[in-house]
Image (cartoon, rainbow, N blue to C red):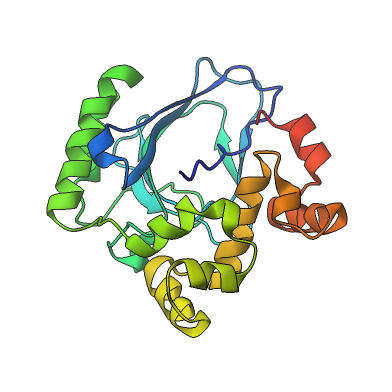
Length: 246
């Protein structure tokens, strides 16, 4: 199944802690992971998180200030977020295509203002704030159940087929064939489902797949891979691996 790499955390920031856990089986077709990103002491300098696209939608909680929360996602290019010298974030990462909430509510930059939407994000953050990561899992699961009941998330057969057959997809035509759609139908479906064109979705999947060390299966040659990797992440593969904890 699809397993996107975590965002870039510079190796020199040893005081920054990232934790991740998988959801219960009943949620596995909706949720990739529950996660936490925090400092265990005040840093000497600001920390910049290097966020790379994965076609996932995240529910983000700021546990330092529980009023701040949001629905986040990136398109096809990286984003650098200045998180400051002390922070505590957590969240739910949904698999591509399952989020059915208001697409206009999705934020693609730093979330730094109080949440004004109708989702129970602030109430959830208040519950999470006093718990350690292991004990937060039940709170995340409770929210996922609510999202399912209210139809904010739904399983998506198109994205499930694509993500389950990443190894066989090298072109948009391959992607269309796997889901039994014409390229034009696939274009309309993906735009509505995740806001990506098939070509952009393929670029993101190729990038994520390359972190598994299998880039030649998705790119014509090493030069093509390096060019594409740098365009999406801002770094060559060697530089990225040397700089970030992957």
